[in-house]
Image (tube, rainbow, N blue to C red; front, side, top):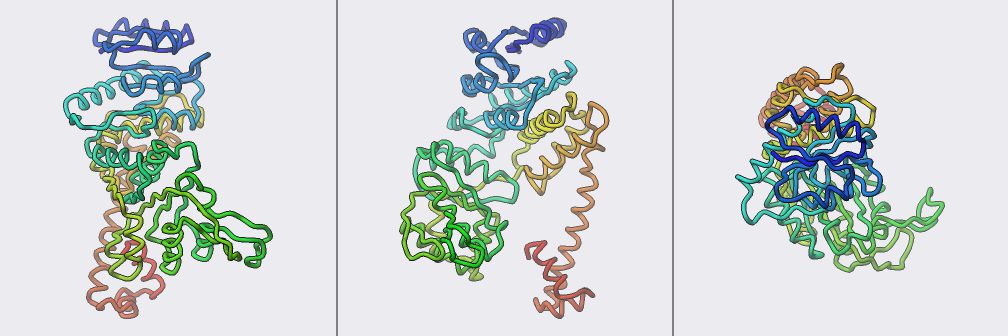
Length: 430
C-alpha cells in the first residue's frame, strides 16, 4: 500500500519515515506541506495521512482539494471539535491526536485498507461520486440509494421528507441537501417540533409583533423569515399539533406568513425539508396528521436506514468521535482494542448514530489507559437494560389487549396509576 504523509513538523516526519521503513507492507512518501503533496500525489497512492495545522494551506483545505480521490487519516497535535467535524464531513475515517503510538496509526491504516478493498469490490458503477460537500463516511452500500436521491433532490426546490429511526442522521442529510443546492449561500434553519412546547410553536415558526402577548416586549421574526432564501428544516414534523398544520400548509402553498399580532402578510422564499421517525400513514389514519399537508411535504421521500444496516460505518464514526473527544479534552492518543472494535461492530445500536456517539464519548472519558477495552463501552449493561425494556413493552401490550385498551382497567391490572401507565405508553410509542 502506497501512503503519502503530509507533516510540517520535521521531527514527526522523520520519526514516521523511520518507523515505516521497518514495515514491509507499506511504501511511504513524505511531504513537508500541502502544496508539495498536491504536486506529488498521483494514482499510485491509496492513502493520505495529513496534519491539520500547517502553514499556508492547512489539512482541511488539502482534503477539500483531494476531493475524495484518496482515503484520508488526520493526525494533529491541536485538535478541536470543529476541525474533527469538518474532516468527518469530508469523508475522513480516522482522526488521531498527537502523541500517538505507531501501532495506533497502523491500526487506522489497516481499517482504511479494508474500506478501500470493500469500495473497490462492492461499490456499484452507478454509485454517486464523493464531493467536497459530502459529510458521510460512505463505505456502506445501504446509504448509496438514499444519498443518490438526496443529491438529485438537492438540485431542485422540491420538498423532501426524511424518514427513519431516531438518531440515523436525518439532520446530516438535510444539511447535505442544503449545502449541495443553489441555496447553499443562504441560511439553513433547523427547528425540532418535539423540543418546543406546543404553546410556543406558532410564534417560533411565524414570529410575532410587539404586544402580541404578555411577554412580547419587542417584535421577533420566526423561523420562516430567518430561513428566507434558504432552507427550513422541520425535524420531527409528526409531532406538530394538528391545529397548526393548516397554517403551515397555507404558508407553504402561498409562500407567505403572518406574524402573531399582525394582519400584514410577509412573503418568504424557502425550501422545505422535513423529517420524522413516525409512520405518517398511521398518523393520518388516526386523525393526528393532515393528509393534504403530507402530500405537500412528501414530494421526495428519502428513507435512511438504521445504523445496524450500515455496519461498515460503525468503526469510522466511532474513531472520528474518539478523535473529537481526545482533542477536546487533551487526552493522549487513545484507541479501541480489538475486542472493543468487535463489540462495537456487532452491537445492534437501537439508538443509531446518536447512541454510538454517546457510547464512544463516555468510553473515551472513563477509560484509564490508552486502549479502550470492551468493558469501557458498557454495552453489555445497555443490552440487559434493553431486554428488560423489551419485556416490559411486551407485558404492557398484553395487558392493554386484555383491558381492551381501557386505560383505567389496564392500570388496575398492572397495579399502577393511569398517569404512570400513560407515561409508559408514550415511552414505548404504543
